Length: 222
Length: 86
Image 1 (cartoon, chains in turn blue, yellow):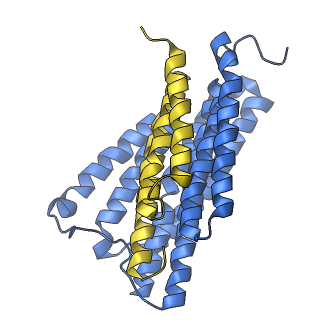
Image 2 (tube, helix red, strand yellow; image 1 turned 90 degrees about the vertical axis):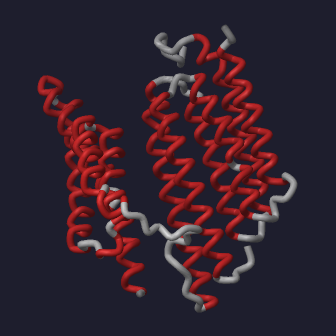
Image 3 (spheres, chains in turn green, purple; image 1 turned 60 degrees about the vertical axis):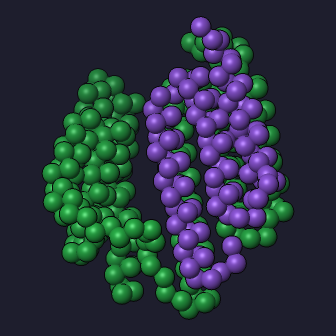
């Protein structure tokens, strides 16, 4: 038997329908992309192909599925962000027009954006460090991002952002070493667990350095 | 108490209908309509995650969908400001 005993029967019974739905959705979306001539529409349909991928991964139905969905989502997000930037910069080069970096329907000139960020981002970062792991990294990253976005007018410390990107790489190595310890010497599992959880915390939180790099590009343009 | 399969198959139906709607639905020549149509498969996937008890994946998926919608809307608005064919 390929399926282990721990998988509940209902998950096994739902595997084939979920697989077929995922394949069907992916097929329809890819067909739509192949008939599409405009790049932006193809990019939107890529989102739907990601949905098909998520259903197939979710059909595995155990903690393994959850562990595989999270990186899938992050990769999809990064991919759509990168391709939309490429589309916009290509069009900008073609027409030679300059447009606002972040088009907003309202003037975001509120008093709370000047006074609140220090406290709110501190709360978010402390709570994120308390949580640790992937979720904690996301919470702390939102705190950093909120601080960076609301303080955009005063200019970001770019040297600091480059350092943050470096920390991201080092944290990735700590995460991998923690996993290696779990498998190679299981006696010191606590050390491995803490290394990997704090490594992924730093890694996810410092991913927001990407936004800082985008901000730098914008200020160079001005 | 409703059976768990009801939520699963409702999610599957929403995903398939939403995908067809996004690809060949009415008014999809407008990119904003197409972006709004992608929300229907997103709700379907949320139901499927819910029926499998993938809480963490569900929360991350909701956050990622919101961010993806914002990114796509920003791309549409900027491309239209440049006067490009969208």
